[in-house]
Image (cartoon, rainbow, N blue to C red; front, side):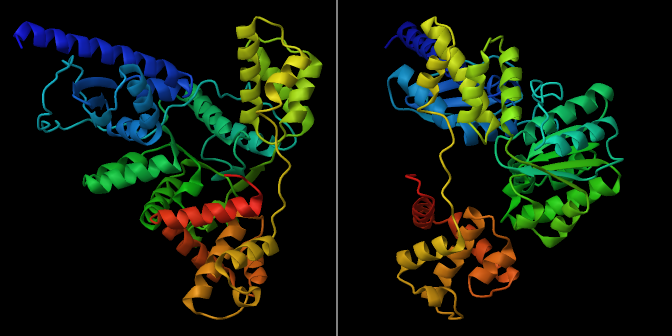
Length: 463
């Protein structure tokens, strides 16, 4: 093959990959909020292709982690569809902004990376989440008032603030609104918004790369620390320990801490030292919104999207979706998109046709201790009296621990209540059992399948 023909092949590969990449970006832009898309995805670039291996470069370690852990399977699927062949994707990071040349050669040994500047520890704040478009109702009024008060005077009141409640109820919205308000008033303030997952990633990376001093210095210079989904730390003992010391350092300097979780502190299987610190501050729960609040949320969102909805359509959607604000917004966007594509007005009959099959809260299955015990007993061929008894044989202890874990996950029982239901065990036994099950879940796929099967059976889900 002549040099000219080889260059033409490289050029063709470059054009094909770039076109496929643009398609992937377009799809991802509709699935990822704009700040995260601009910070972690849009900055990534495909830099080389060798047969079926595509190299992608990002501008930081965290962008690399975010891409790999969140979006790589979807990117791979899109690129394979566009290029009509199976691919392997590899992600690396580089701070060089020099243009790259696509090659069709064997991968070369990567060059050592130059010493990098410190990467930002904060995730981007989403400017679509602010106090002005947060709809206040009876079920979120306390959390909203606390967040507002903190944004006016961080570190002086409600410290720490612990907001808890189910998914899609506005906890993250309040965190972003609080952070942006602080920055608007004090642009030099160091506001760090992280998730429990991001903190874990930062800590593990610092250990692996021997940068713990840098990690601690960055985190302990924060003025306002916003930690979303703290429940992600459960079961990660070394990360818990580092979080504990980071928390103490920030708190002792009089800086503000705000945390969110999907459950109350007393229901988190975290170190008792951490839980006591969470509980010494302000606890604010957020419950599913009532009908009037759901209608107000829909009206606010419709105005933001320049949609005109009749009262009967708003009432229909608010009655259809009762427990999740994200679903309310998703239903509205789906309806708007359908009406635009079909070039038709949004009517009640259209809303019923489009939304009834895909939205709405199914009637919840009532789960209690007895239902869990019956399912575990049947699955492992163990008598109920043995599950509740004191026998310590392995074939009894393992199902008993699974029963305690499932009660904690599927019911609203407290740890003492679970212990009572399992034959009078104390709460420390329940906590130990749950941690044992969580540890096995993290490493044993066959065990994961057993727990999933039991969960689906108990809740009536088809999985």
